[in-house]
Length: 346
Image (cartoon, rainbow, N blue to C red; front, side, top):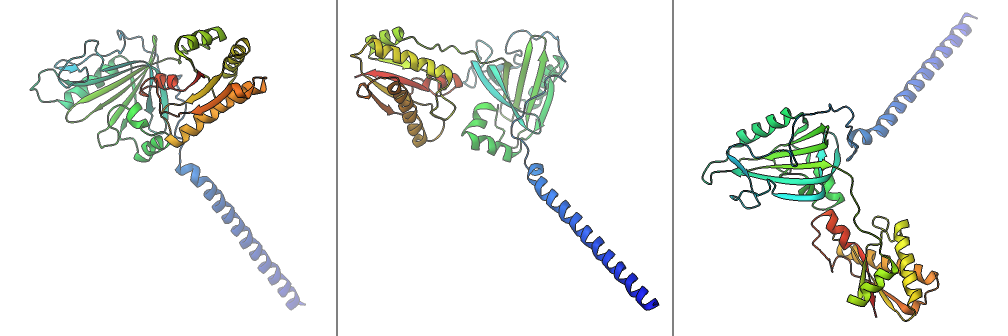
């Protein structure tokens, strides 16, 4: 009986050990699976995120007028050429553009009135003093309440991701040359006059500052009426329309549909008018993609009109992509002008 009891007890102990081992293995497997699931999120952070202005102290310092800084003593803001001073204190001014800011973790867009300032020594033969420039700009920004959110070299993989989404993004929207070893310095100023950002960059030969006063984009393009289209076609043989589609698609937005409704009215009121609907894009993306996109958008307009009763024989379409820009694609505002549909009489 003792032997039987010992055997039973031994069996229970072995079974218990096996169960505990199995439970431990299950726990380890669960932990391993959880770690594997979390790894991608831990290794790859979000490229863009919203910047929290709420925890930034409000400054009421005297900052003057845009772009809110001038050249330090002994330096000049150039007009684009190395030794010529700018007359308005800015190398480049745009009423609406953006800087892409970096806070050490992710990027955020700062859109609004933008200035780019390129600095050089005032005396032509004077040697560039990088340390004095850096200290002058840094101390001034600190004095008006600007807070530095990043100083250093932006990780190359982050910059690669920016340019992967859209070519030349880094060059167009981050001041200086963040690709090399020279550090960038990004500041934010929560001022009683508004929200302002600064990007400062320098190397052993020159310095640059980018400034944006944040504000929302103000649409200045109005939807034309049927009468305005008719007048333009009679004068020039065509009407230029900015019809809004979903981004990178041929789907009409509601305000784009309103423009199509005006084209419908134009055609109904002028039964002898035949129109070639020609699509155009900006230079974002490949040429092949833009030709296809502009053609599809022109077709969307044509079929929308045909569905409302316009005889298809009165319409034809073509897409030119970015091959016939109205203006250079050097700003978001100009790109918006180039994204258009033209109605050409035939």
